[in-house]
Length: 250
Length: 250
Image (cartoon, rainbow over all chains, first blue to last red; front, side):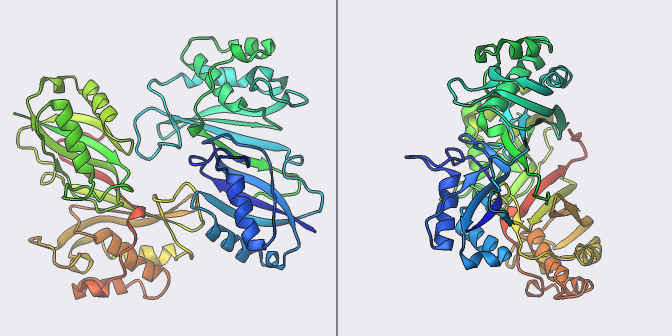
């Protein structure tokens, strides 16, 4: 069997997240079924990570195995797969990888963006969270700087998840202003379930001066989800990048 | 009666254009009905211009007359109106103007954008036209430069329209490349029905080398719609700016 990576993007608005599940429509289900039609065999995919209901992905990689000869013309395969998929899921590339390459375990870095805006905007619905008031980007960035490094982020994890460790290495965390919106950009080796949305909720508390920037250290030290801010809505969240040592950025 | 301007924007995807009509949902109908509820009187609006089915507006002004006292708190009025309007129509400002200010006749400049992209993109559906091949921006800009000035543009007008003249003064017409998309920006004192979409269709013919750049002069001189290129789809078109001598840009 040959192993392949697919690079894809999707608008998550109409899906119950990435992962295939009973009784709800997922991005993975749509992808698996389009692949199975094209390859004429039952097929499963392994994604770099999950996204929750309504969360978008500008870049996600999945792997799958197949010997189908149709895969030899990569460009034509991508074109056919895009034609079979709905308008809100798009394939960018098909890449041949070595037989034990793994879309989830081999990812060394993941990046997310969270977008907020402040005026009703007919083009941003489902793609950014509308806030009434403008938080202080300076205060939020003072706090964001304290996230950097290798720390136990249990405080930002959904309770009752079964992972072996809550330690993540955050490489970058910063708010930038762009066209009247504020965008939070964060990169780490891994993320816990619901982590970015809980971090953004906590940073907004600080941006609205309900807590000082150093409060974020207190939250982290507590390892207690209830100390962190409320999780913000899914519509503003994008998985933007997944990095592998052996995949060249396109 | 006092006269007011409203500045608004909308995503045109779900509407049969700006103008109110029988048996089809228009942006104007939604606006008039929200205004009538809020002002508790039957109300009509006059827009700066029409947009066709599926065309978007980043900026449009309308005028209306009313003596309602609720209009004295402009910020609160805008907030209430936005809450009544659907998600894809947004009010930016309410502006007091002199009694004979006219949203259509007083506009001295209008600008449009047309967006095309070249890869399936889950975030651009309804907001940009996807082309398979990439036209030459250089050839299209050589031709676009020949549009500038005061000319009879009958060749780009929908047949059988009843306007007193087809002469328009085009001030600016240029393609720019942005994030993998191509965007055509055009400004003029006025536009004829369907004009931008017919111009873009003609420029694309030139961009794909089916005609040389100077062909556009031949099309204009012919005053014949059938010489121009096919009109491009509505989804890529945005009314982006309307200018009045007495309204400060926000």
